[in-house]
Image (cartoon, rainbow, N blue to C red; front, side, top):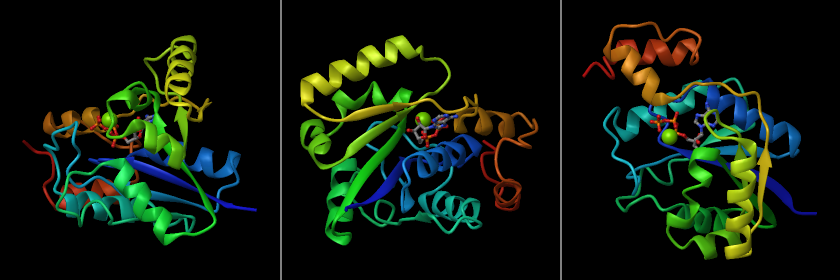
Length: 201
Ligand code: ATP
Ligand code: MG
């Protein structure tokens, strides 16, 4: 039987409990061997205005220290090219044989899938798990997912997780406004942010 590994891409700017909870839900429900967090180096669709790649990588590492099934990859941050998921999955397939990869994304990212690089090939190489995120109705998402699966002949599963209205954007704004970010992310990440004066402008 093939082993299963989940891949969680994102800018993690900063990583928060929304990311950690969905990764753990997938690990648990799909009986995965591990979840690989892949902080994006140069995301093609998004300007990273907050922390540098190294700090985002370090924050992702310290946030996942206590779980030995969560690992953090530097594949994207050490590459000088734009971070296309298909290239990352190709590298992972070369690294791990006899493995089924599941790419984990929130519903906000799933609906954008047709705009990703080489969507059709990507969907041939891995399955997708779309996890619920507030702001998207289940009916709308099911419709959209079916549309994408039919168009590309890929496999996307919708997973309902406890919804947490946490986003990195909101955390960055709170820091900028001098508001509390307690309980939105691990305390150790909060300490890292304060020590390194991140997100103050
Ligand atoms: P930003 O506000 O900067 O976009 P973010 O909170 O969306 O940050 P990302 O690094 O963009 O975090 O997200 C990585 C992945 O995690 C994406 O697939 C996103 O949909 C998912 N995700 C982030 N926060 C949540 C959440 N609270 N619930 C479910 N999925 C989430
Ligand atoms: Mg996002």
